[in-house]
Length: 199
Image (cartoon, rainbow, N blue to C red; front, side):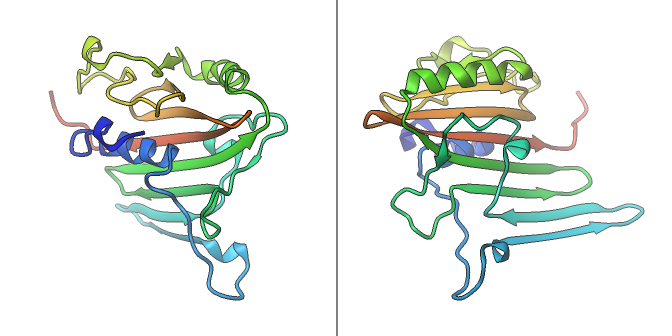
């Protein structure tokens, strides 16, 4: 994903998610020396009669949390950053707003097209699957009030593929990149809700 394809001011959630897909914003939590991986989790929840707020930061995520199955035989992709985690679960919420980003970065020896076919079928349970690989942003309806998911300005790096399904508030995204004869791919779940403004 090149920086010029992101409009950070207009769509910060999509920008963060897509930057994460292609490594512009690697998500990783470093453990202190001698600490185990379980120390890579942090969460706080505050609940009361008028309050429901919390924060979660974790270097672990599961297929259940991302809402998509793990491709058979796929393994976590570590990449060049040895201290970065191939998974993350980040969340921040309050009574009137919420944000969650769950990421799994994986690799497979299978070809990108095979991975794409598998995830297009898996994404279909969330509604129509958008193929944003060669989408033309100008041809889409970007109505801010609509819950309908669009590709917007999101597109993969050259040679990659990008698929989405869900709604603007709850979207599932799969980014796929060739890696030699195999594939590196990321599964994302992005949830963003805010207080509804009167029409």
